[in-house]
Length: 201
Image 1 (cartoon, helix red, strand yellow):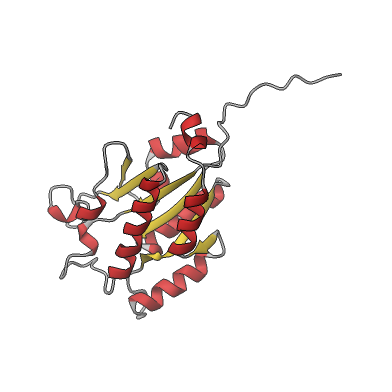
Image 2 (spheres, one colour):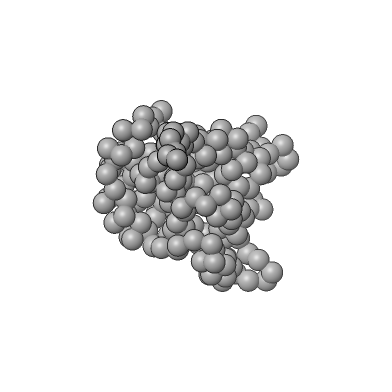
């Protein structure tokens, strides 16, 4: 007895996608509750990643969190992009209420349709949005890599921001690879953008 092999509904690709998470003014505005100390290094590395991704023609997804309370409220300027990270018209933009990127149903469906997405994650904050997205990706068996020095954390349990970030990064290592910006740029530069364009991206 022979079996007929029907095409899968999933598109298979190992083309990487760069996700820049919540690079919003709320995190860099002095005096705000979510302002992060010593965030300049993280922001600088995110800029390097964005420039590298654009130069290599890779898909880039920008996420931001919008809420109805006093923080991340779309009626205030604090919810807006940090100017250097304003998306281009050709780049993807997703908005959500909950921490994980998968809270956006369109993004979640897109990842499911890809079947084998390869995600590189950077942005804010590691202890909340990055960690929850990474756990959701692991549950879906999606390949995701966390770029440690292109992210930052708020204070947790009396720890400083840098101490909290180290603690959270160690926790994230239980779910995915954790690499530096330099290593991420090497991997993204080696990627072949034709794989993405071939699937209609």
